[in-house]
Length: 300
Ligand SMILES: [Zn+2]
Image (cartoon, rainbow, N blue to C red):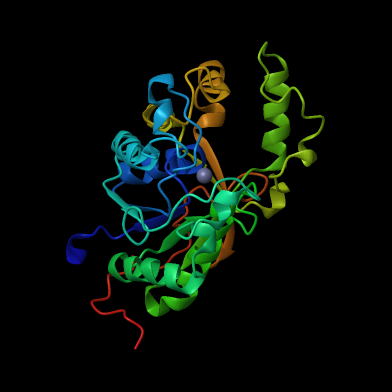
C-alpha cells in the first residue's frame, strides 16, 4: 500500500469519534481535496458519551453498552462526508475505552484509555507512523484542549509515539488551538444572536482554551469545505443534537467560523506565512522536497 501513497501525508490523533470534525474537519476535507493522504487515528469508541437521539438512549454505557459500536458507524459516515478513507482505531476497535469525564469512576475501568500504558499505546501509533511516514501530525495540547482525560492521554500518546518513531516521526507537529482574537470576535458576533451559546462568558480569557495570536502558527482556511464539515457533524447525531449551537453558527455565519481552523506549531520549522501575524496558510509550508516513503523506517 505504501508505494501508492500520495507525496503529502497528514496524520491526526483524536480521542473520540466526533472530535475529528469539530476541531479539524475543514482541515481534513481541505487536504483530502488537495490530494494529500489523510490518516485519522481515533483512540477510543466514545462509549461514555451522552446520547442525543432518544430512540438510541438505551445504547448507553449503563444499559446495553452498545454506544461505542454505534459511534464507530457514525465515525465512518463522518469521514465519508469529509472524504477521509484511512480511519483507524488505536490498537484496533475496542482496545481502549472512553474514560468519561475527569474524576468519574469510569476513569478506573481496566480498559479506560486514561489507564493505558503510554508507551504501549504509543507503540500502536508508531506502527502507523512507520507505514504512512506522515510529514505532519495534528493532536491536542497537554491539557487536551479542554481537560478531558482521553484528550490529555491522546496528547501524551501522540507525542510519545513521535519520540519513538525514529525516521518515521512527523517533521512538523501541530496542536489544535483558538486565537483569543477570534474568540473575542466570535463572542461579539454571538452577542447579536437570540440564543447566544456564550451568554455566560464574561471574557474570553475565562475559557479553558484560547491563545495569544502570536502563539498561533497556522490558520487553515477551509471555508470551501465547511458544508462537508457540517455534514460530518450531522453524521455524529448521537453526540451533536439537531438544535446544537454549532449548527446555529453554520446557519448564521456560514464558513466564517466553522470553516477556519487554527494550530500551534510545537515541532518543526515554521514556514512562510501571511497577514499581520505571519500565520502559515498551509501546514506543509516550509517543508523541503516531498518526503518519500522510506521502505524500512523501523528503529533498529
Ligand atoms: Zn472527545
